[in-house]
Length: 77
Image 1 (cartoon, helix red, strand yellow):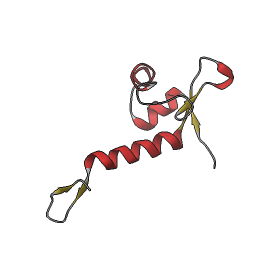
Image 2: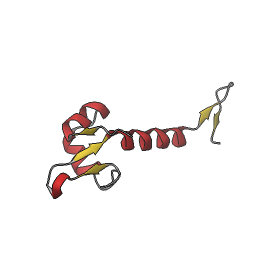
Image 3: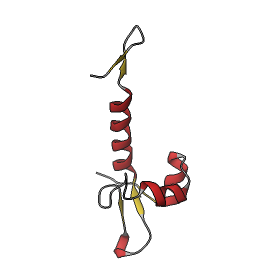
C-alpha cells in the first residue's frame, strides 16, 4: 500500500482549510497521531497521511448525510 505524505500547507490546499486551523483545531481533535499524521524522527514537523484522512473523511461524510431516496427523502440506513 502506497502512502502519500503531505505537509500542513499541502493538506491545506487539498481540503481548503487554513493551515493554522489544521494545526490548532483539527490536529489531536480529529486527526490522530499515528493514524492521520506522523512526526518524522520525533521532530516538530507534521506529515499527514492523505489516504487515511480521505478514507475517514469520506466514511464520516457518508454516515452523516444519509442516502437520498427517489422521492428526495433522506434515508439514514
